[in-house]
View (tube, rainbow, N blue to C red):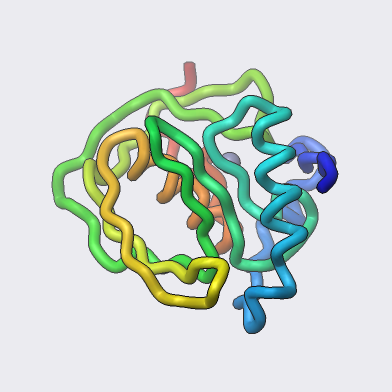
Length: 150
Ligand SMILES: [Zn+2]
């Protein structure tokens, strides 16, 4: 395992805007998953996506409010109409926060390490973190959604 360098948008905006590729072989990303966890914990964050460490693969990790989740080829399959506005940040934008509206509830379909499909239902901060990380995989950054800078 290794702590990887987190790309900052100030220097790597163009890279962070790229779309990540589908993972075809889950075994090929075990090291990446382990490194994402170690890097996330070192940075004290709630979520980290592979493109933030320079890897354009559809992989991310989320750890928030008792949820510890590995996302592999995640797809948000359902969102509540109800939204919640909260202050959000991103490890690629240090010391920057803004208010973002996110669905109160999402269902995300993902693969686990064995390559099995599973569906996770999450609410509030967990739902927010999942939406944020899934967007990273399409080159969407939270600043695109900010209603109001803080
Ligand atoms: Zn982020």
